[in-house]
Length: 68
Image: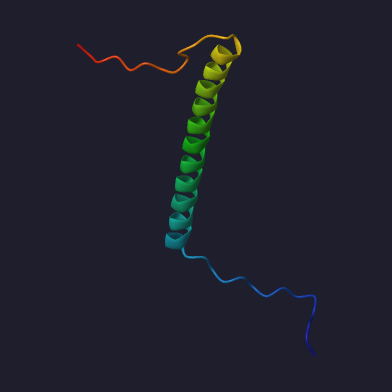
């Protein structure tokens, strides 16, 4: 007879693999946060240019001046 109500014990997880998984997840979230910050910054720059153009101004693009 088998006991269907009994749960089989789960195999013990290796501490080293758990640390690797945590490091991979930390890296993933760091990349995700960096991409989000970059996206928000780009959207803010585009909004500034669109606001400038909507006001009828010309030369709304950024001008890179050489450093003296």
